[in-house]
Length: 115
Length: 114
Image (cartoon, rainbow over all chains, first blue to last red; front, side, top):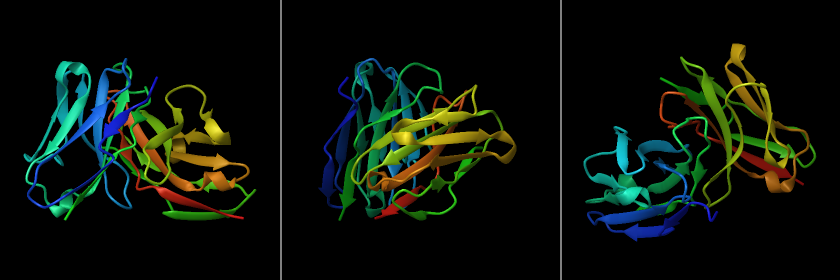
């Protein structure tokens, strides 16, 4: 069990550029979640996958955001035409099975800075 | 809708003193409750969780929390603080039919003074 990994750990980009983040969940976990965390706040839910299916998206996830999980393994989160308000820590988490009582295992996060 | 309120964004204790971090939740259905710890530039690590059964739950690093339905609370305690406990702590709530999405509080930063 190598845990949840995220890449890159840090990303600095200019406003208007596109960025893509990757998350590799724990291998046997079929649920994968994306959260966004800004300074001084707790993580906010963005979207989640059950295997390869994206089952829910938060209203926080504007049209500039897209997430995929091909083959139900790793996931990518893309932000198009980045804005300064997108600066945040993007956290990925995975969990085992469909029971909400299962705890989520978090990756180290990708810190995005938009200049 | 569910929500989480963590009273006190900053808590400071002396090493060896009792740690008490407060969490109140709002949920219209039976909640699942979690406490996570986050160290700088790291992800969240689960300390403990309540799902069903015993209302006093014990977690890692000597932490425990008690689910009090009547008070809608899930406060985190540790009898004796250690310097290594200095971190940010998040309380989160989920419930059975929301696919495990967690709603988090805004966090409490714990400082431990020598």
